[in-house]
Amino acid sequence: MTRALPRFLLTAAALAVPVVLIVLPFGSFLMSAFWTKEGSEIIREFSLANFRDFFANATYVRVFLRTLLLCAQVTLIGLVIGYPVAYFIWRRRGAVRYLLLLAFVVPLFMSYIVKIYTMRSILGLNGFLNQILVGVGLLDKPSLVFLYNQTSILVTMSVIFLPFVILPVFLSLDRIPRNLVEASADMGAGTFGTLRHVVVPLSLPGVVAGCLFTFVLALGDFVTPQMVGGPTGFTFGRVIWSQFGLAFNWPFGAAMGVVLLSVSILVILLAGVALRRQRV
Amino acid sequence: MLDTALALLAGLVLLVLYSPIIISALFSVVEVNGGIIDWSSATLRFYAELWQNESILSAIRATVLVGVLSVTLAALLAVVLAFYVEWRHALAPRLVELIVYIPFLVPPIITGLSLLIFFVDVGVERSVLTIAIGHTVLVLAVLFRLTLTRLQSIPPSLAEASADLGANAWQTFRLVMWPQLRPAVLTGAILALTVSFDETLVSLFVAGDTMTLPLRLWAMMRVGFSPEVNALVTIILAFSIVLAIIIALRMRPNTERHDQ
Image 1 (cartoon, rainbow over the protein chains, first blue to last red):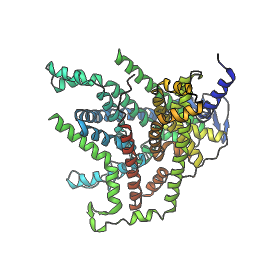
Image 2: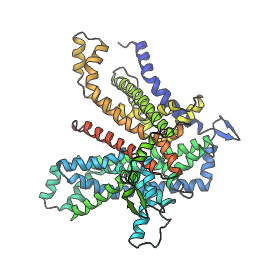
Image 3: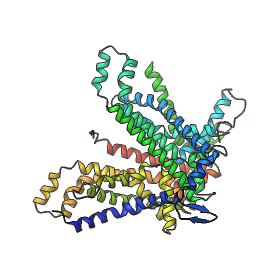
Image 4: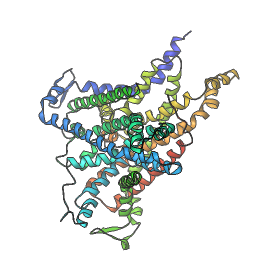
């Protein structure tokens, strides 16, 4: 027997806050993407004009595509460096293993803005990188090429998001039963044989999760390009942010937000499909 | 051979990952001239000066206020919602779960601009409260996940036994369920606090004129690198590292796997 009224009241009480603080804001965002701005007026009528303007503008589309490429590069660098590091931690034993894991997880909690700031001071004209390169004689004088361009965004994002690859890869390596690895060794496979045929295939869920985190985080980042990108280093996130500041066309910014959100959802779905394939 | 190469790589990566604390701690106490560290200039003066800088103090106050408000509210909501989705008469519990996770799953820029558009639509002025609301929806997912996992691991027989012994719903919650949930909620709260403490991307959208620590730092860094900034950065990083280690220690004893 269900008592309809108390059930309804309890539901309403429990859901009121999430609906007001989550559903309504996301609803406003999605709706405003289909409004338009004329002069200083926002026309509250359904229109696809923002999306048409966006895809018809070669500059915006180029920034959008270049950002996708940038995020793919950040993900790839994260994987190429992060996987071996996770594998290294996994091969340790006991307290060393736990402490190493902790050492690589703690940077996740270190201030994001400080990491960017540090990267800027490393890459800058008077930064460590220049001082080292000049010191060992590779450069005659400090170079400006390390900061305020597209590459400095790539380097900075790769460093910031690296722990997001290491942790999931380690967690999925940790789920591999030891006896599988031992069996592979007993049957005569060397370290590389076991790595290639046993360890890597079984750790793919962690690889997919790590890549997913990195790609989505890099896609939405607008502070890194702002701080190390200089005048030429534009990313999609930075373009969206600028619509809410200087350019001040919120509906257009919301529409680009919808494009960014669609890409994120697509990437999440693709990762889901990849994981399901893996399990079969 | 392989292990040596991997150890070298891991060491190098650690050096890069910890460069923020190494560099800022160094520059907060000494001067560097022409690549050479001048140890005679070592001073803790800049740490003392921080406490006289009103803009930094007000940023610290705002950060603490936002953290306490948002984590308290999110912890309350997380417990209520965890019980709700486990209730057998709940409407669309999976949908409720999805809604709670949305702000954490989508890129922060989307959560930030959604809240901004919503606040302006309903005529809410941007202030320290709107930042707190932004952080609440963001950390709710973390607290909810940890609370729900713990709640699901409590045998239903406990609550049934409590009812059989004559306890009412509130007594069962207070005396049986809450002691079981408390460690998970507390761990979630500390984790949520570290997220709130460092949150930048959502805050930038909903902050208005209020400056939390990350926003104040951003403003200070645009101007330049002073020893004072480095001192502040060192304190912030040390604080986050301590919180991270507390979380790691709290989560360690329960390493039993939750394989589905």
